[in-house]
Amino acid sequence: MIDTLRTLHLAARLPLVIFLLAAFCLAAPRARAVTITWVTVGDAGNAADVATISGNNFGSVAYEYQIGKYNVTNSEYVEFLNAKATVGDSLGLFNPDMEATTWGGIVRTGSGTVGDPWSYSVKPTAVGQGPGGSDYGYENKPVVYVSWFDSIRFANWMENGQGSGDTETGSYTLTGGTPVPTNANSIVRDPGGEIFINSVDEWYKAAFYDPNKPGGAGYWDYPTGTDTPPDNNLPSADSGNSANFGGAGSPSRWPYPFTDVGAYVLSESPYGTADQGGLVYEWNEGLVGTSFRRIWGGGWNEASSIHQKSDDDTHYHTGDREAANLGFRLASLPTFGGPSCVIGDADCDGDVDIAGDILPAFTNFTGPGSFGKIRADGDVHGDGSGATSNLDPHDGDVDVSDLLTMFGAFTGPLDEGEGGLGGPAAAGDPNIPDLIYDATTGEVVLDSDGSSIIGYSLQNATNSFLPGAHTPILAGVTTALTSQIEEAALAPGSGSIGLVFPTGLDLAGLSALLTVNQVSRSLGAPLVPFDLVVVGGA
Image (cartoon, rainbow, N blue to C red):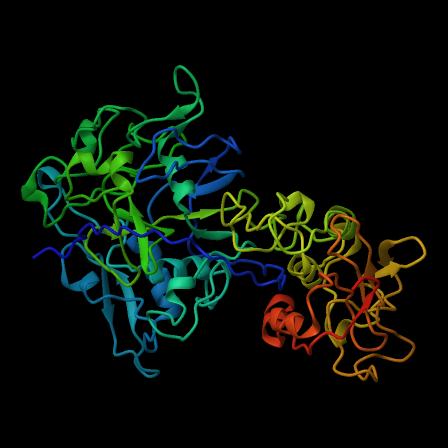
């Protein structure tokens, strides 16, 4: 019996909640055994499809991005397994069906011990089993029997430079160290991530959108750039509207159903992606209900109607599902390895600095609540309710969480050197710019000699973490945007960041809002509660 996907339907579709980490990490040089062929998807800010699918209008993406031209292959996944699953496989990255079935394309040898580690390789060629008696090689067939968690772990591994790169942090954070993470249903993309699996809109746009569609930019019904259902000719008879589905020519080929990724060279999407209809279903980030992840694209064993955009929204499964017709492809930022819209970066210029990020946030400060603010205003942290994508996770206001995010991620302009504001080791380092608030002018400026600290709350009022002759910042902000916001500042010697908050919020309420753990996650450092002094207002 073929273990393939069955469509599930849920009536409830709950919102995706996005949690940010405000620790800014510089990417290490990347030595790569796996090289992805990327296709650039431009036309940033395109309109969503007017066609409504299950109550949604998909396809609008506010930024340029890249998507893998092909699905991840067996040979690429073998590199991953040999790097991360040789002595034990506690994360369940290998499914025995990859070896035991004709649909899987990977074999494993060894016993998984230190003395006899597992070794993975692409399955030997099936001689004479391809179309017309040709040989059926597995190297460039899509990897299958991979879960959603396997897919994002592969993305993390790519993000972290491959090799020994971590699978549990990077573009996604997974907790628990188990095949199904303990945070399985709350995993979202880190906005600083550069390699990831597609969001729903990213996948949909790459498959169906055509900026040059006759009559004006818009969406085709099928990912071959047409509104006509594709045929399932073999690649040798590619009509320009062909795909691998329904056995790709003959049900007798089902024991060996896959074509190589990209085999239908005449039937790509308008942006140049291959096989977004047919071959395998593809995991993406979309969360349906509380525990289901979206799959798009249709499989080799499906009818052509499955590949139509109006059908794709009905397919989803729990993230631990692994099947003979389910794989994935990656996506990335267009400036992968260089400046990008990093965490805390309001103007998306590749750094978190004063002029482009922190001063706009001070100027546009509203306090908590929805006020129609956007990322460029300083709204860089939130639940995604005001966002168009995971890369733009704002919530419509500019509040304390946005300032904390910027402080924790602060780098300074790229031409002034890298590096954060925040640990004791950085205190007083003249090569790392700090911020200082000038109460006489109301401006925040760089303190170039490194005589101040921001982004790190001192453990006590004795300044025990500070080197001699250094004092913490006494910061404050004044705003007249709402009557509920007043000036607030840190008590001298008790911390390093000035915060603004509604005067109606007492210290107990503030403590609940900014717990030690929440702030620690935001700033990436062990913190104690902030001591605040409210200046004016009741």
